[in-house]
Length: 123
Image (cartoon, rainbow, N blue to C red):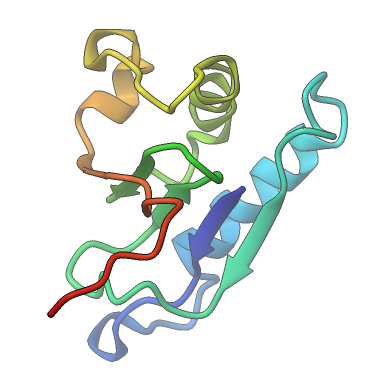
C-alpha cells in the first residue's frame, strides 16, 4: 500500500493545487497501466504529520518494513512506481539504499520496522 499525505501545513496554503495532489494524480494515472497495479494499493490520507516536509509517501505491507519518504518532488510518480517494484519483490521490505531511484535518494527517508506478529506485553 502506498499512502499519501495531501495537505500542506497551513502556512504554505496557496491558491494553486497542492504538490501532494499533483503527485497523487500523476501516480494514479501511471498506476492504471502499471503491470503490478493489482499488487499495490494507493490510498490518500489527509495528514501524516510531516508538516515541515510535505509531499509524503509511505510504502507499507504486512510483515514488511515501512518506508516513509518526505519532500518527494511532485513530478516523480515514475520513481515511486520503480521503488514499488523493488518493494513488492522483496520478502521483508529490505531494499538497499543504492537501489532506490536516484531522485528518492535525495528525499528524507524513514525506515520503520514491521509490527511483530505476536502481541508484545509490557509489564
